[in-house]
Length: 426
Image (cartoon, rainbow, N blue to C red; front, side):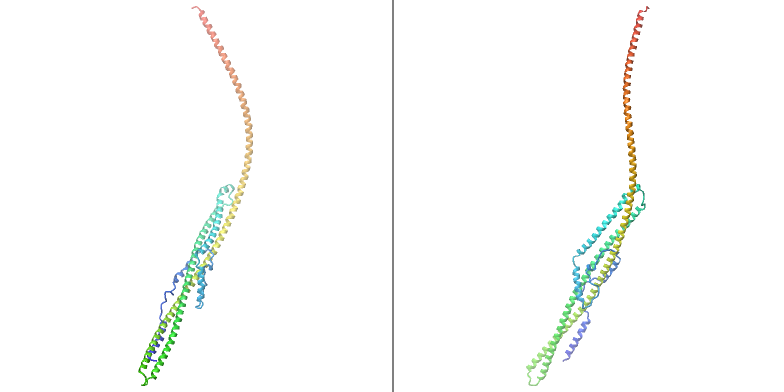
């Protein structure tokens, strides 16, 4: 074998190592478009600062896989399961929203019903303050306790609204984390698909290199055979045209060998690039798995926080129920006291009414007697008036007769005086 071929073989042996040492950039199709770790790490701090609520969040709704690292051999199985789970989680978001709305709607209706009971219990004592003044103050500190219970109820109602808002925020955050997990799983699946394509291309390149090596060996054997045949046919009696043909065949074999060596080098370079791309894709897959595990851990932390919120709100609802029962008990005691006071006042009023009715009947009887006496007095007065009128008429008639007699007497006296005056001499 000539020295140039040995140099070419040495270069061919050294080039794959150099190509493996070089870092080939990962194609854009294999680069996962994932969120940075700083963004995901800030979610637990936000969830830890949220107070407790009581919405029943189940991990099955998030469609999350178990957040445990998997080996390289089981990556495709885990990815297919995760992708199927994400396909289940990619259902319309309105289903989960409708479930949340229905559950919160039922809880809100129960809360409004409890509020109506509480408000009616609060308004009933306020409307009976006047009756309490008439029946005595058997529960003097009742208004203050009612005010304290009303204030505590309003505080618990505000806390319930805040917990519901925080629960909705945590549900939105859980859904966002679920979507991020689905995206990461899709990216991992695409990266593994590209990695399998790269592995297939690498295997094809290696097959091509093996075929080229076999062809190169055949060409080298043919060239050696042609060279030996040319050395054996060097006698003087050999034909010059045959030597020229052999030299041309040898040159063609050398060119084929050089082309095969170049093709082998190109195939090895492609294989090295595929190996580097596979390594980078594997690193990207590991990074995506890490981010997916972090997102799943944060989602589970959000679920645990939501469960804690649910238990806390259940305790708050129990305290609210206790307050409501205490308020109902006090309201019943107050109503019973009011009814007893009203009964006493009513019986006293009935006794006074009976006494007044008897007095009224006595006054009416006396009034009838007075009316009878008055009628008799009026009748006697009328008779006396008639008699007085008759006597007045008789007196007037006697007066008139006396006046007429007196006038007649005066006329007689005057006539006598006139007669005397006529008869007397001057």
